[in-house]
Image 1 (spheres, rainbow, N blue to C red):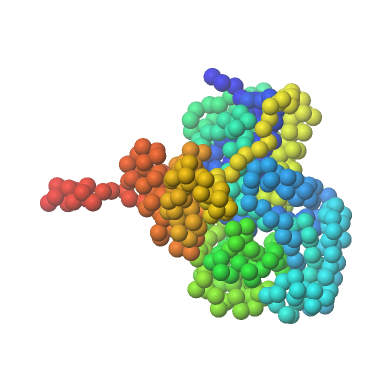
Image 2: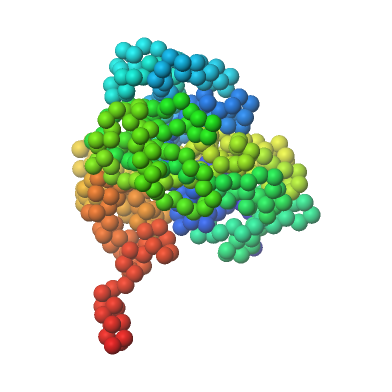
Length: 492
């Protein structure tokens, strides 16, 4: 049986960042996730996609430690891995003079955290020039030039692809049941696929990190889900915000945000509701109305564009009882590392947390870290015909005609892009969606879903009725009409 040096539990943004970081070293590393694809569970698939500056995290906390550092790492990382990313800056907006004091507090906190170039803009004319659709009631804003926006699920997929290119193995549809510990040392993980030996286990299991940690004997914290609901608008409204617009934060949330996405849509949300069910991603009329009211304070009149909402969704944040990230290695059990409670700004912090995990492995002498001579930091994104200059697109289509067959009209996704996504590991409708954006446009898959399904069936060599949306139990066409007719005939 193969013995791994490191087993990482969880293929969200944190787990994939750790996998990519450890792929720089001569280690046998394994990334494990219970879902059918990368970034299919937890917060990574459904969050605001903001790279935060780091001004609102309590000085001295792990969040304050990792967020500004992660922020500084993302531009280079996004360039190396060709991840959609824009350094847009952000605003925290206040609507009366009394609240300017709160901006001053955030400014001071940001400076203590090492956030560069923060500025309070107390000039309504300048605010209007920078954000033409911002409420005229706004009197001031904290401007954070280092903030940005990113596609979180595309980032996780890119990190995983690059990690795999550099030798990391990935086991999907593999549920970790417990961490095996003997005589105070980690021996590996018991999974739905059997026992997997590993010298070091990194717990990046998101909402379930407390349960995994408990099996290793570390049980001083709990994690509860905090639901956030969102509206996403058609790209025709993408111009309403040039950067993420925040209200003043509350003790439990950064507030309801209005932000552009890297793809050009407008996103509003989230609210913050503490719930008990770690799988409940349902939306509610009450919650979505709350999101709309919060957004209307920043962008007046946004309510009249309800007909341009193309999707509602909800995400769950992993809120720890400690109210801070838990990033620590233990002497007992030796070889166990918790990366738990990674709530906002977890997306921003992921590259810095990944570096910290490598440092802990070295400092605790859990493994000998030797850099690879041939580590490849680069990953090429799937070519998008719609984004290419005509001469490049024509050349590609001449070489590979499938790139000239557009199967998603809203996002202009070609058959060639879908085939490439399958080659890279997509096995489901949502796997294609996350990698190519087929189904993310105005019609939400009304036109392209069946074309994607047919391509998946053909390329994977399976019947069409076996193709799923996001894994077992989500088949789009469970039966063929002929089978149903036969059943009726037999029943009669």
